[in-house]
Image (cartoon, rainbow, N blue to C red):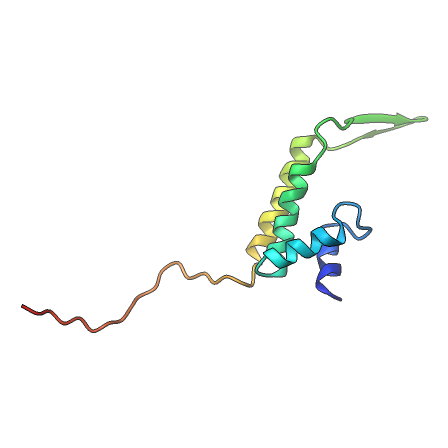
Length: 106
Protein backbone atom coordinates (compact mmCIF):
# COMPACT_ATOMS: atom_id res chain seq x y z
CA UNK A 1 0.00 0.00 0.00
CA UNK A 2 1.52 3.35 -0.99
CA UNK A 3 1.56 6.48 1.18
CA UNK A 4 -1.26 8.21 -0.74
CA UNK A 5 -3.55 5.21 -0.18
CA UNK A 6 -2.59 5.06 3.51
CA UNK A 7 -3.21 8.80 3.83
CA UNK A 8 -6.68 8.41 2.30
CA UNK A 9 -7.41 5.54 4.68
CA UNK A 10 -6.26 7.43 7.79
CA UNK A 11 -8.22 10.54 6.72
CA UNK A 12 -11.38 8.50 6.07
CA UNK A 13 -11.26 9.65 2.43
CA UNK A 14 -10.97 6.41 0.45
CA UNK A 15 -13.21 7.79 -2.32
CA UNK A 16 -11.20 11.01 -2.63
CA UNK A 17 -14.12 13.31 -1.85
CA UNK A 18 -12.32 15.41 0.78
CA UNK A 19 -8.84 15.85 -0.73
CA UNK A 20 -7.64 15.79 -4.33
CA UNK A 21 -4.61 13.66 -5.23
CA UNK A 22 -2.58 16.88 -5.55
CA UNK A 23 -3.60 17.99 -2.05
CA UNK A 24 -2.68 14.60 -0.60
CA UNK A 25 0.71 14.73 -2.31
CA UNK A 26 1.25 18.27 -0.96
CA UNK A 27 0.48 17.05 2.58
CA UNK A 28 3.04 14.26 2.18
CA UNK A 29 5.66 16.55 0.63
CA UNK A 30 5.37 19.18 3.36
CA UNK A 31 5.21 16.74 6.28
CA UNK A 32 8.16 14.99 7.82
CA UNK A 33 6.38 11.62 7.87
CA UNK A 34 3.08 9.97 6.99
CA UNK A 35 1.64 10.56 10.47
CA UNK A 36 2.47 14.28 10.35
CA UNK A 37 0.65 14.45 7.00
CA UNK A 38 -2.38 12.70 8.50
CA UNK A 39 -2.35 15.07 11.48
CA UNK A 40 -2.26 18.10 9.18
CA UNK A 41 -5.03 16.57 7.07
CA UNK A 42 -7.32 16.18 10.10
CA UNK A 43 -6.56 19.78 11.10
CA UNK A 44 -7.60 20.90 7.62
CA UNK A 45 -10.76 18.80 7.81
CA UNK A 46 -11.67 20.60 11.04
CA UNK A 47 -11.42 23.94 9.23
CA UNK A 48 -13.54 22.73 6.31
CA UNK A 49 -16.55 21.54 8.29
CA UNK A 50 -19.78 23.14 7.16
CA UNK A 51 -21.08 25.41 9.90
CA UNK A 52 -24.50 25.68 8.27
CA UNK A 53 -25.18 21.95 7.95
CA UNK A 54 -28.63 20.83 9.02
CA UNK A 55 -28.45 19.10 12.37
CA UNK A 56 -31.67 17.09 12.17
CA UNK A 57 -33.63 15.90 9.18
CA UNK A 58 -36.40 13.45 8.33
CA UNK A 59 -36.75 11.06 5.40
CA UNK A 60 -40.19 9.50 5.30
CA UNK A 61 -40.90 8.16 8.79
CA UNK A 62 -37.23 8.03 9.80
CA UNK A 63 -35.45 10.90 11.53
CA UNK A 64 -31.70 11.45 11.56
CA UNK A 65 -29.62 13.69 13.78
CA UNK A 66 -26.05 14.67 12.97
CA UNK A 67 -23.41 15.36 15.55
CA UNK A 68 -23.15 19.04 16.38
CA UNK A 69 -20.44 21.11 14.72
CA UNK A 70 -18.50 21.41 17.98
CA UNK A 71 -18.44 17.62 18.35
CA UNK A 72 -17.27 17.21 14.76
CA UNK A 73 -14.47 19.75 15.21
CA UNK A 74 -13.39 18.13 18.49
CA UNK A 75 -13.31 14.71 16.82
CA UNK A 76 -11.24 15.97 13.87
CA UNK A 77 -8.77 17.77 16.15
CA UNK A 78 -8.59 14.73 18.42
CA UNK A 79 -7.65 12.64 15.38
CA UNK A 80 -5.03 15.23 14.43
CA UNK A 81 -3.48 15.04 17.90
CA UNK A 82 -3.57 11.22 17.88
CA UNK A 83 -1.63 11.00 14.62
CA UNK A 84 0.74 13.80 15.64
CA UNK A 85 1.71 11.69 18.66
CA UNK A 86 2.57 8.79 16.30
CA UNK A 87 5.08 10.96 14.42
CA UNK A 88 8.21 9.09 13.36
CA UNK A 89 10.26 12.03 12.08
CA UNK A 90 10.97 13.88 15.29
CA UNK A 91 12.65 12.72 18.43
CA UNK A 92 11.63 13.41 21.99
CA UNK A 93 14.86 15.21 22.71
CA UNK A 94 13.71 17.83 25.18
CA UNK A 95 17.24 18.76 26.12
CA UNK A 96 20.81 17.76 25.48
CA UNK A 97 24.25 18.26 26.99
CA UNK A 98 27.23 19.56 25.08
CA UNK A 99 30.53 18.18 26.29
CA UNK A 100 33.40 20.57 25.71
CA UNK A 101 36.76 21.28 27.18
CA UNK A 102 36.72 24.66 28.86
CA UNK A 103 40.01 26.39 29.30
CA UNK A 104 40.09 29.56 31.37
CA UNK A 105 42.86 32.01 30.47
CA UNK A 106 43.89 34.92 32.62
